[in-house]
Image (cartoon, rainbow, N blue to C red):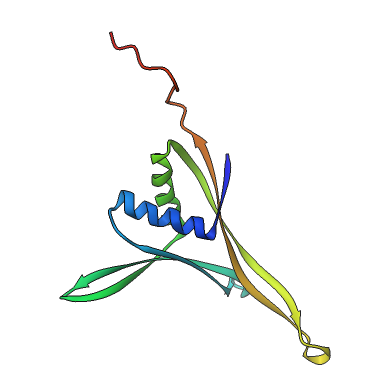
Length: 138
């Protein structure tokens, strides 16, 4: 099954993972910006998932931020979906570049801006449960 989550829903999933499985209160954020990749410096969307939490270090309250890679995102979502009896097979980040034209005449030029709409996950319902039947333990 393919399930899509908006950017806001994805943030809630990440925060729920840290709350339920790591017992940490975190604030997640997702940001996208235009960047350059490859040896030809092609324009691309660079999406960053960041988790921040407040910690006390030497008596001082500090906010600690950590960037999450795509592999880490897949791993934590896989663990979260296990709680709901789903096997996660893949995660795709729905991001890219929008382009529009600005200016007039000689000043006309293309402007590209990055976006992230959320994620799409492929999941399968675990088949080891039979609904409505209890095992016969004689």
